[in-house]
Figure 1 (cartoon, rainbow, N blue to C red):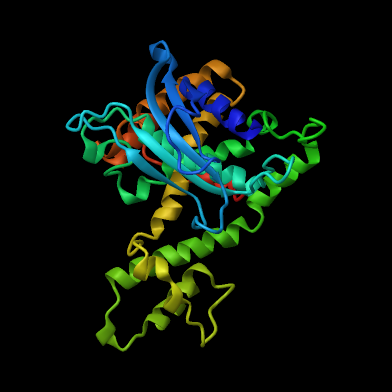
Figure 2: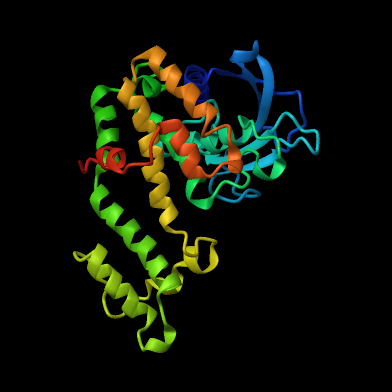
Length: 327
């Protein structure tokens, strides 16, 4: 549909790749599943990757959420030169003669997962363990995915698909403005909340001493005094008992990575903003650089080095503060 075409048009523009529909060329596990191939326009349209897209919600037999998984990773040892990805979403399915009408959040989710997919599919690393998303350090994994989400607020990108499904009328100007405003609504409190969770996690995993007489809830209150003094937890607050991310979800001492990935992805998008999003030639140049670094090097080069190769410097939080309307 129009959203997919808009997203594929964007990556064609910035990364010089072409996405082609290849439905029917492979077996699929459900009639809704689509199959696509990716071709490199730098190399006369050479087939370099493929992906399955399973876009719609099926509550009976499919778990919620959205994720990218690797079907086949690039690997010289296994002789796999063409990586294949699974992109799975839970979007609103088509109903009757109505096409799938996606919410804006679903569009952002699709762009997000496609960002992960691009890092898997455009990799130039040939050792399986560090090809694509493999071996990428935890705090840089979300860089390409959150980077892609930024384009959902880029006017030409959005207006490429934001049309009324019956009349073809474009999204009214004031609604686009509202979309941008909702992005920054409450952004300061949201940032403080994430900083609190990230630093409370670090504090508990690096400095907390159970013998000291201080409880984990005392730590929570102590950290809230620093990061959310406007909303201190009540005495009965037991949020930590349900903070599955850091006790059972793989984010132990790593919750900060959510915020850090936002810093890097905003700063990466800032490189495009600096040359001017409407400066076609310059955008292509920055896109090539992003593709040659972040999307190519995989886990074989430290993320800090990868970022420096792309941006020419260490990450700076300035772009994120600007995107959040805080600077």
